[in-house]
Image 1 (cartoon, helix red, strand yellow):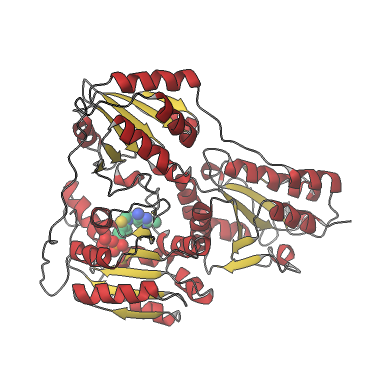
Image 2: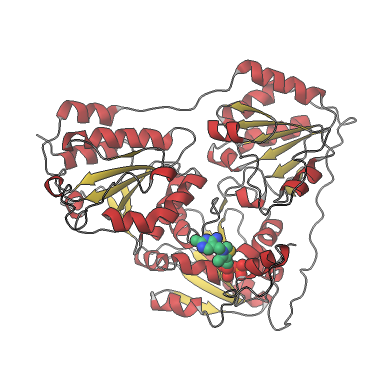
Length: 539
Ligand SMILES: Cc1ncc(C[n+]2csc(CCOP(=O)(O)OP(=O)(O)O)c2C)c(N)n1
């Protein structure tokens, strides 16, 4: 007879979940006993980075991914990462150890009291099975929840004495054999109506969001834009966790501004805005104004019923964004070039603005130096607030699965996610661009990159401050706020302490040459630190 542990590992095998990201404690050891040879355990040194590595891996592999946490304290540390995973729609199956059942009610040490409560607002399913024999079924259900749209994390708390119990063979085998497919097509009438509206519109526009990348639907988005001759925007940057449309395409208009008034302004010349695979919208900061111009209508296509319900304006159609785009390409009429000449191509960006002080590169110069070293197929994992706009403008990423950033705005995602993305995409170079402040939240993931020889290039922009917060202070008219300077934070020195090869470079050419070298190296991670001038870089 199989044990609960054996039956559960069979279930993970059946779903291709043979990589486990974790940080173990005594309550997790019974799960890890006799660890099978066909499974890989990836150790993260703190739970936020365990979450981040799994999140990057799940998004880049499109597979449900198992994260194992240490009872109450581990889940507590992981909460910021669970919030990120929810915002990223990352299909994570999170397990946490728990006291043995006979000691839970007396709250013995390491009891995860009310285990399902803490992660609850950020997960789709939060459960502690009533019996050991229910563990495989609960995990099967967690996998289904994680993978059904909108994808996201699901949580199961598992008492440590459950693993050695005898499994209920029939239920365990049936749980392992289940596959739940959630790729639901949108209402055909709604799509036909939308296609007519597109055809009849004078000046429609398309906004392509992160979920188009997650759905593998770039080609359909490009086909619709080209057939209908639509200008294409990316949603406001804060919601831009992935890129769903080639940013070098002549019809790509740029990233929408982040706040209500400016978004309405950017879209006011259009009579119809079609948003696909994004919330409407992830606004920040608050700049009031009408949500849209008086002559502008909006239609959202999303697989997420909550996104559809909470949009503050426009119509919404719920369904798989890839299937919907594919069908719209068939239904929408080809636009007449005389009536829709298409947008003007964005101008090539010139020489980046010089820095002050002049002995440091500007953030835009650093991004231009990165662009000069950029291989076509590289992947950017980005957590560098003051240079994100400049990075997008200069790299103009144009391949699917090439960009990952935390959708919740919670720092501590970048380094860890880059490790997970690289593990899921071993044949593509991964470059992680970080502010030196952001890097600190997930810094221990540098150790995992070294330990597992994950060949990410980490580029750290060292500006000695929380630049974006100084910019927000200006917008919010806040003077005299403390805690916005970061003197003497040397991330290269920290990386060396974790065993990583790291260097600091200063000039633009030196930066490009160094990045070319580190990106080509595939025997382990490298870190390149570059001092940049303070400030925000928006070109
Ligand atoms: C977990 C978490 N804590 C705090 C913040 C607030 N925050 C947003 S940006 C930022 C500063 C980032 O500094 P750095 O990485 O050096 O980037 P820069 O703005 O200088 O480009 C902070 C602290 C956050 N987003 N997430």
